[in-house]
Image (cartoon, rainbow, N blue to C red; front, side, top):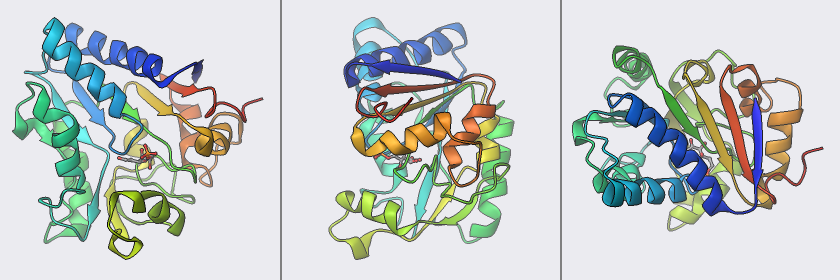
Length: 242
Ligand code: F6R
């Protein structure tokens, strides 16, 4: 696992955008794994800028989201289906039907995970997976004690994660309790994984992920076993590293 500490979030965005750009220019039909939340927003801004100003095209690319809430419709402004379109994919040339996300409105929610994993496989697997990290060490929404080999499935959010995400909803009671998330096994199959974190609130989780034991208690620690993973943080998020 490569760990890179940079002085500011703009440089993190530039470095990760470089990695995505290299993939997409080398293989236009690349499969991108996309995270939502605050952490990747500057990366998406930078990729949109490169699309507009230097002709970086995603016309042949595929995208798969990490996760989706259960209990709010896709039309809700905080569904990840809506968020990724608003923040990123509506502003580039990727065809809308190639932006995939787990269907939190499925009539067969228990079967949705296996269907989602199969659609990732059918697309050829994820070439580059972008990740944020929760303050409790989650990636995707694999909360502490998630199996390191887990597949896409339903999970219950911890109160900590619901509190962290309450800023996106009118009140705490509006934050969904359940999600569909790619599993740690699913995420581990990506060919390249890039986790980004900024701010002191992530420092303990980053240190546990990078320097702690590989353990289900810190789900992000599974990236220590990944053959091509990078953790890119600012100085605040890296401040608890030895
Ligand atoms: C979002 C996701 C989560 C977030 C994490 C950090 O799709 O999978 O793991 O990356 O909760 O969220 P932010 O970036 O908002 O701090």
